[in-house]
Length: 360
Image 1 (tube, rainbow, N blue to C red):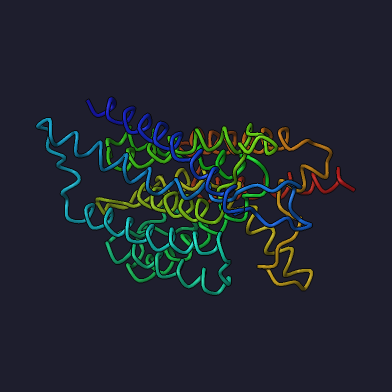
Image 2: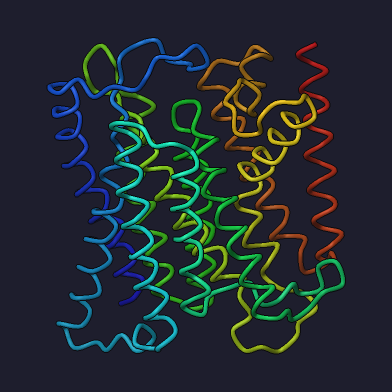
């Protein structure tokens, strides 16, 4: 029954998003709500950037509808009524509302980065408030169970990092939605194995809304008014949900110290956007520039400079994300967490050096 509900949530999201996105396109073209055409942008046509407006309402509708359906047919959602989980879910919705409104304002009239960062920090603080924070390093750097204060501080930093990483990686068609889809499918499946049905429901509902968006974003034709971007509304929504799922999976729920844990597995699905955001910030600081100043140094820009087309760059980066995530999940039972993270870092640095060498 619960596997059926996961499928139902996914299909509801697909159908609802498929209905909403064409209406957003229609309104965007009538009101001339297009993305800015800056020098660093890949596209040259007038394309709407409000696709992300469909994300949060669709996910909320799908999750609430399926849970209501489950209860109406006499099944009691026991795990949902756990005091901690219910608080976490409600605070997740509160944070999504704030980010959703901020994203819409930014996509329509623009919001200063300081203002967006402040909202992100407020939303990030909601997770520890509900009892959700990174509480165990599972032997990473020799650390185990950590204090709630340190865990809460680290959690806030991680949420802001992931949310901005998804926002920054959204540079070519399908990249942010594709990388998010990879992470959502992996995390959703991992939650199913743990029988954490409600988190899996969120993952597959979010994946469902990305399927029609990915089609319009990648295969839609601008000259036929069928192409759309997710904008900050979409990237902020995705980043926040992915942060929630990764931290939830990595949390040690029973408080018993473990040598091998899910911390590396959870965040391995987000290695590409997070590592890329960190690399770009370091390079900008090294060159004496503001780390928040946009440029053409992201991973997709490197692939384009190497001669790949936009579609080829998209496929290569998605394949890289799948390989990194798969290797981490496969090797983590046999490799110590710190060694696994070092291997990921060395591999990433080596790949970047190779790409730069090819460009030169």
